[in-house]
Amino acid sequence: MKRNDSSPKILAETASADLARRHDNFLKKTKKYVEKFSSDDNFLERQVALLTTVLESIPDGILVTDNDMNLLLYNAAAEDLVGIELSSMTPQRWRREVRLYEADKVTEIPTDQEPGFRASKGIANEKTVFHRNPKVLEGLLIRVNAAPIKDWTGTTYGTISIFHDISERIRLIQQRDTIAAIVTHDVKNHLISEYQFLELLLAGECGPVTAEQEELLHLLQSDSLRHLQMTQSLVEIYRYDVGAEVLKFENVQIESLINDCIEAVKPAVVAKGLHLNTEMANSIRKINADKRALRHVFLNLLGNAIKYTPPGGSIKIEAQDENIGNVLVTISDTGEGIPEADQNLLFKNVFEKQDLLDASGSTGLGLYLCRRILQAHNAQISCSSATGSGTIFSIRLPVAKS
Image 1 (cartoon, rainbow, N blue to C red):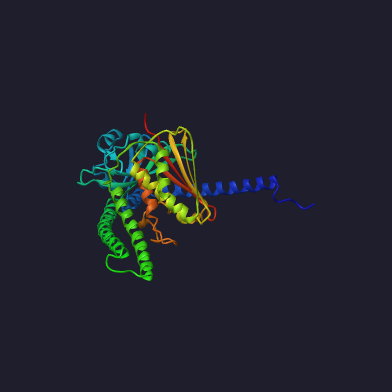
Image 2: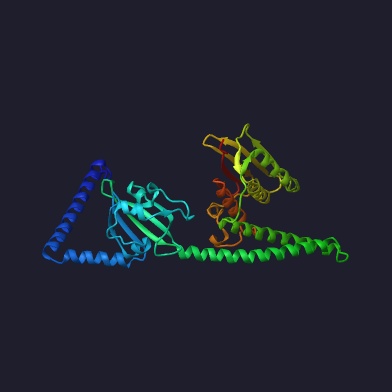
């Protein structure tokens, strides 16, 4: 009978032989290293010099600590980013002199939420922090990557943190956005004038209009309105991004707001031959929201559903209380769906996308603005979709505090 080479016995013998070979190689390498170390009085010094050279050649700041946050190793870049001398740094001095803030530059990060501290608890993490560097008047925005250092048993015995200064990149992004906002505002004013002039022409204020001319003017007016809506979205996005948008929060009954939005889109729903259904649970708790801003979110999502659902299709809005302290609103349709490859870009701004327009000529600015508005409400938005199977947008809004 032919021997089975995949039998448990053969596999065990092969694994044992492989383990023995690796162990033998490890002993040979260790022996060679020890012999070299013993015979070369300057070997250790050269290794330290090599490590120092490597550390100092890295432009990002590097900090290595033990598990009690005592500093073991650092480079000059780290000292420059922190802005104070690190040779005598202690955990107590760090807590006293190195204050880290959220990216908003106002909210101080508690010690137990600092990236390095979390790494000492075995949690690899990444966070953008603001540090009031005493040598840099405007302070620094720093991207911190912190990770635990573990032994072969998985026990954390230290941390390593990498500090990357992103202040200049953020400044350039803000400068770009400011220029874009100024240009957009000027274009918006021009488009308003253009739209109003086209209305005058269609009304015959400048003379009789033939049927052919009227059709052309309607096309121009529709195109002008689309561009006007796009520029308005850009202006609003800029206001949210720089924190200039002032929201007026109040306790809002979600059913009333949804019904208001349904009435606003009914003409478009009827004109396209769609079915619009609602399903709202009883006794939904109120939310704390800016009604105007939240209305914009619902109208945008309903507008997209109408746009991408073929005649005869259906759109459904549902609202219900969640036990975790949220109100869940879903807007679903039976439209063409969204390819999986495009779903990660849904809520990105225009500068984060490779293509400014999608196949339908849409920039996707509306969804990015929806995300910014919902972020201001401490709310979340997500999408579930597949090509040919429709789309579901889910919004979770925190309930109002009693």
